[in-house]
Amino acid sequence: MRDYDGRTAQERVAERRQRLIDSGYALFGDVGYASVSIRAVLRHAELRDRYFAESFADLDELLAAVLDRIFDDEVRLCQTAVQSAQDPARASRAIISTLVASLEADPRRARIKLREAISAGPVVYACRDRGLRRLATRVASLLPTPTGGDPDPQQVALGLVAATNELLTNWLYGNGSDSSQAMTRDEVVQTVMFMFQGVADRYRRSPPVADTAHADGLRTP
Image 1 (tube, rainbow, N blue to C red):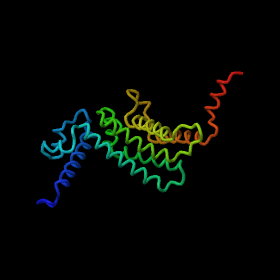
Image 2: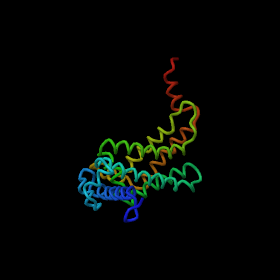
Image 3: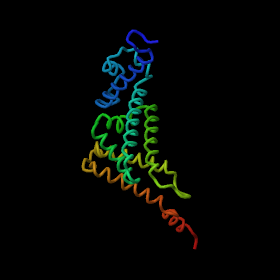
């Protein structure tokens, strides 16, 4: 049953929740998680105090919802980017180029994903882990089928995604106090491609060259 404004109670709750997420995105992206209060979010969203608790227990849950939206968007962008790729190498380049472009175009997105998400609470930590694993699943689908003894591509891809996150942070925010170590956009793309291609080439080798060499060194004459 719909009320006087043509919306159900559930639709009004969903609309208020979306307004809170939009406001969280703006505030977390502009001033950072540590500087945001529930009252500030409500004021930005133009909602009464009681409406925060109907959707979120605390700011950690709100930031997780914001981060979820970022990862949803990134997964969608990556899926679109690889549709026209002719091979895994081009697909992987399309993915990293798309992620770089999305972060460069929206400083709020970059700050929330790369900085604020690592300084929040356990709900955000779990959300970040799920998001990185979703991206890793896309990367793993581009790797060659492993042979016996090779590591699980999903875990290797997760390592690639985590390393890429660090490279993106270095690119956007520099390397601590030594700005000379900061990367350029092209360097980020080239470095990620170097890592991906190295892993892909490694999976194509049979038997594993590095493991065989290590085993030979352990044999007793």
